[in-house]
Image 1 (cartoon, one colour):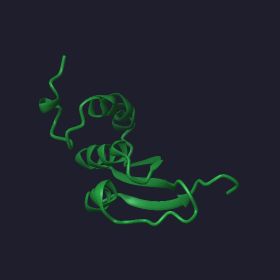
Image 2: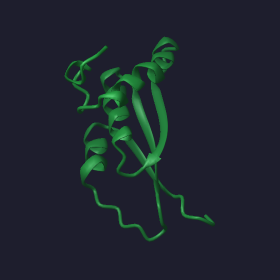
Image 3: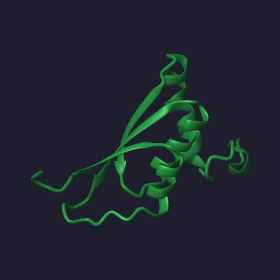
Image 4: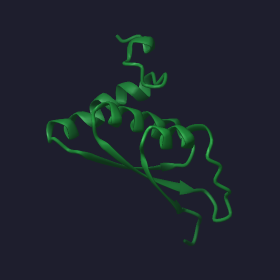
Amino acid sequence: MKRDGLTGGISFGGNKTRMLEFRLAPAVAQKADTIVFDFGIQLNRACQIVIASRKLGMNLKLILRKTCQNEKINVQGNLLIDLLAGAHIKIVNSAPGE
């Protein structure tokens, strides 16, 4: 059993942080230097992966999906944290028909 306050200080992650131990371990074992993930723009999970990969010394490339073509992108919240933590971000449309 792990207490959330003792999970390594990755942005109050709880279960998300524990999941990362299993998802990133193979990358560490293979000496990967870059991780690529695909998420929605403001998801907590993306923020967790950015911080975890940076703590491991890996580069992170995030492909973030807009929910509609006209969605306005505000650099705030989790997206701001992703950028401040050093993620390389590409925003793409995921609206139906695109």
